[in-house]
Length: 280
Ligand SMILES: NC(=O)c1ccc[n+]([C@@H]2O[C@H](COP(=O)([O-])OP(=O)(O)OC[C@H]3O[C@@H](n4cnc5c(N)ncnc54)[C@H](OP(=O)(O)O)[C@@H]3O)[C@@H](O)[C@H]2O)c1
Image: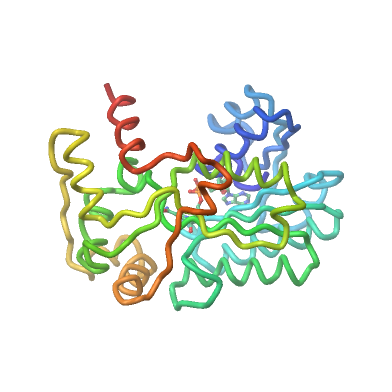
């Protein structure tokens, strides 16, 4: 499991362990709180740095499958692609039989959105190396609305609706459901290998999410639309490019695949209700 200590990876680890798999959690820092929590759940920790392919091979040796995800936010899309390609090379060299790739976006065509096009580059490399591959493509995590690390006030309730348009559809999935779906994909490689799965358990515009938030929380979410230049100074241009692209793109969003894999996947309302409950 590459990216095991992160949002998606830790959910995948939890669900695989629950299903009885033996899981190796790859991390740069086995002493971190997140890594130790995975070890306490039953995962084996392996120290790697995905920037260095040589560290990945021993960790993947003999593994049946690999879940792999990279985050471009801390170090940029070039580092993301390099890490993703290194994982592909190590997995191919070690004869891994199923790779499940935590990608992103709304399709398999290039869009000019850097953090979506980087996923296509990594997926192409995984295919080029002949790996049996399933690509998981969530569009937006429900955590964008609730997790402070995503700065919801500035993002999902702030500049995102301003640039994208508040009534445009967004495909939502929570990371725990992504984890459950990945575990089901690993359990049935015959059905899911060779496929790129667009995953949304609910499709709601930001205005609709805002109304649901109001119903559930009893107040409106706070939103501040910073000037674009200021937002970009802190986060770069990836998100603003993405939101502008989404304003005019003709995207076909469906909940069918996520629901067929995980009928109990959460709606936005169920997610917000859970978030309110967790805070009490
Ligand atoms: N936010 C959204 O709505 C959304 C929607 C769809 C897709 N996505 C995509 O989701 C991805 C981010 O996933 P996430 O939120 O699960 O990420 P995350 O929580 O930031 O986790 C990233 C993981 O990568 C590991 N990592 C970082 N550098 C590494 C390196 N050099 N070698 C080995 N491991 C390394 C970290 O592990 P250690 O620190 O333990 O080493 C960490 O576990 C992005 O690609 C994004 O485009 C996001």
